[in-house]
View 1 (cartoon, rainbow, N blue to C red):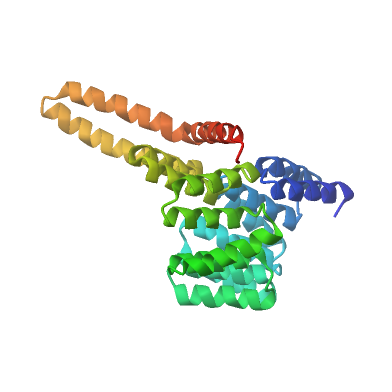
View 2 (view 1 turned 180 degrees about the vertical axis):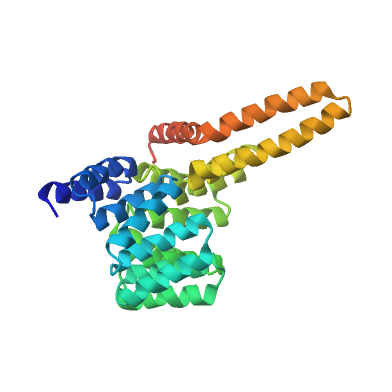
Amino acid sequence: MTDFAALAIDRARYAMERGDHFGAIEHLRDSLTEQPEFALAHALLAVCLLQTGRIYAARYEITQAIHLAPEEAYAYRISAHISLAEGRKPDALSYANEAISLDPQDVDNRVTQARVFNALDQQPEAMEAVSAGLALNPDDAEAIVLQGEFFLRRGELDAAEANAHQVLEDNPENVDALVLVGQLRLRSGHADEALDHALWALQISPNDIDAISLLASVKMRQSPLLGLWWRYSAAMNRYGQKAAIAIMIGAFILYRFASIMLTDAGHAPLATGLTLIWLIFCVYTWSGQSIMRNMIDKELKQVRLRADF
């Protein structure tokens, strides 16, 4: 590894810790320009691309990382997360198991396996995997929060709360723990407190997918119609432009079918109106992430004016 490539990696890691995945991408590309066959840079770039919704590009980068360093567990672990985003859950489990076989003492591999089991709705196996991770490192924040999420799913709210606060005592700005507390507040009917925790998390990590999803859930509780808009925007943010293209293609097929049926039935004005609705839908679907980002920034500006925040 050259000195320049190493420096770029350090800068990328710092940007990732601050939630600036777009900035990290630039540093990682600098590193790969200097050293194209740097497996770790490809893997970290895959993480950042995944966090910014560019799933197809993330898959390409992690494939490069596995090709360059097939003995490294981290590459398979990251590939498992990308497979989950792609909806390929069995593949995700295979990658997670491979990561554990390469490095069974790494708590991150156990946590990844737990997330995959959770996605497969295999709750006993998920809890067993995260417990195995905590046996390796009882202080691992990600494992503690994930176990708290499983407690929440099982309705064990006190246990989930205890896990969240255990992490927040050591790091009050742990985004995952803040989101977990927000989910608990929303579950207990305190939407305002849940909103505070979602916005607190987004101030720390503006692109955090779970924090955005929590914000959408709060908006849904406050106003079902507005909440649908937030839920749809959050989904587009999670799955990226590839999903937006697929949705627009599907919408176009439905639109053409309905338009032809209306025209044949003598309802040409309705068909024209449907065309306008479809065009508005496509424009929003393509630009929805930017619109949602502006809405989140507006929410953050408003909350910063409060003396109690």
